[in-house]
Length: 424
Image (cartoon, rainbow, N blue to C red):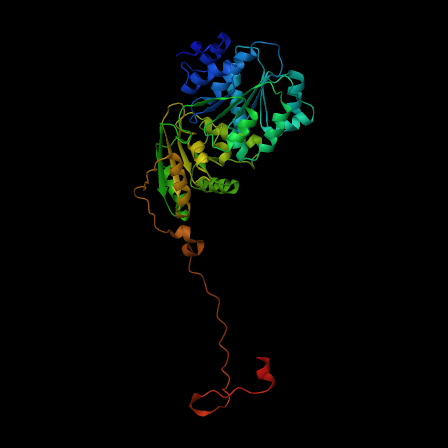
């Protein structure tokens, strides 16, 4: 089925062709007619299967009709995902006069205020916190909003945005169309859906726990102290092109990036402690091939769309199975092939077992040929690789005092009576 059969107007079809797409993905074929009809929709599909276009395209088609005003709002959990959605919307709307903008935290707010007040927008992509800041400064109003999209709503709840979402929902017009899209829709999202959506249609094209078919998964059991060595060996393979390596913590990402740089790899780091400029530069360098490896926390598990990303490697096993699905979904996008490796220390075996229960199948265990899995001196400690440690001279033993006179045959004298005995 071509895009033209979905009922999209000509200017939007021209934008789709200019973006390089010819046939709609399954989630797009199912969701676009429903969104065009005005129904509330909950869309669940594997990551990397075109969910963004499934809601952006029909929204743009709707915005072509009616007076210019801020009529559509897309909420996302991270800056990276917000920027990605805004870029896609601009691409699809290039042959229209629709105005698309994005706001998120981590950057100065005055330029965003000027954009909203002076330029005006038809479609706004935003993170919840910055949107509320702008509303509190009376830089944005919501009375004309006709369509609300909660993109990756499960992640917004996980990141603590539930109170912000509730505040935003109370500020929006009741008579609106609401769309919720995510690669995973766990049960806890039902409360958000019940509050935000009215009689929604569910579009579930595949079990949300199933990654894309083109992703080859493997688990590498390895002692924790050898993870960096094993990662270095995996990254040295000539077939590894672009890689995202996921860690659990920001400090762990910085530490691992420095270790890989010292071993000769081209690396950038991406996490919440980096400035927005640093985050954009790191992602841009990976997309343009200036660096081979991006070491990142879970802020990169959604909204990162990099062509020809050959591998995703979990240096640390993620906290939840849903995060695992989102992480490995950065590769194998749009029917491409990719590899997802997980380095599992013995302490993380329970987390991997939880992931396998979520997937409904086991992930193959793999051992890297010719890799020495024994304890290595370089990992045991500096003292084991340098010259033997000089021990401090022991103090001379004290001169033994003469034993008090006592009874013969080594028998102990009877304890003294009196005050000393009572003190015991």
